[in-house]
Image (cartoon, rainbow, N blue to C red; front, side):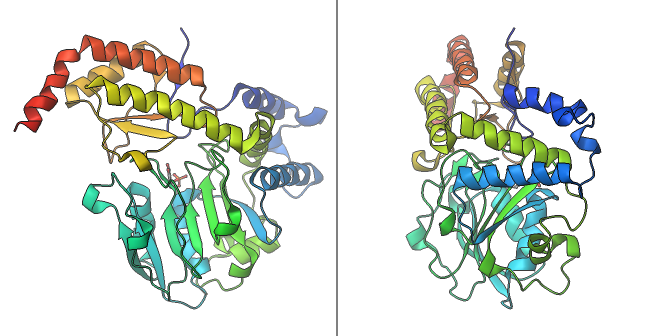
Length: 371
Ligand SMILES: Cc1ncc(COP(=O)(O)O)c(C=O)c1O
């Protein structure tokens, strides 16, 4: 039986990347050493690091006045590193709360500065994003933070806001490298690697040169963007293996046609799933159509027993890791770049079969809506 992995991260990796990783595991470029064994100060790692940097710069067309940092601590670590590094003498920042992860980001930032919630999706229970014309942005804010794709809620910005002179800073963890973006629109953006850029342990930060230079005095050396940028991200031992895998991922994406092609594939995969959800009567996706995620599709069935039955039957068919995030419940199908259209097609067939077998269950919605 074929098995397909719909995990939200760590997530599926493409087979060519796993194959190339095998070589790096035991005998990198015939050196007789594993990538995990080489010194981070040596020529071998310098080559791996440089290749990953150049491939990413090419993929995203990153301008020369932006630094790329390869860090540790996950995107969660960035929730603190951002205010430590980007307040630059100011005492406040704007946060736009569109779901689970942006809420966490704002909570962490409150430890360092005053947080203005410029907009929140709470009124819609995070099923919609307020129109940016209605945001209450603070012109004195050091930056404005958004989460471009809410992994737990399945909500994604369809266009970037204009925050005027206030730098836009974004957590792009779950839609990083899934579509082209104009880096020039951001002051900084960051992503954990374990969704679209390889394995856990690496966090990529892309930051405009002019925002560097004013960390808070309490900023630990290993969290100091300015110091990290000056030292090619090597203030302490970098995650050598994760950087190696990320380099393989960047090259694989390029070889598959780059970000435009990824966007086309991801949109096609998402359309297949939303279609079966909307036509079924059994599945419910509460997210407003214009902000539905192209990589994390979240939905519910009428009750918990049916959701458990769905997850059990899916597993029997080789469709793995479909349980929703603990904060949101329900079902979540994540299909980053490495998840094939064939995998999504298999899920769609299963969902149609399950809906047909449980067609009576959709009456519960009618009962519920009639009180
Ligand atoms: C959008 C988003 N931000 C932040 C995080 C936290 O990432 P990490 O666990 O790597 O710190 C996640 C994890 O899934 C995420 O999806």
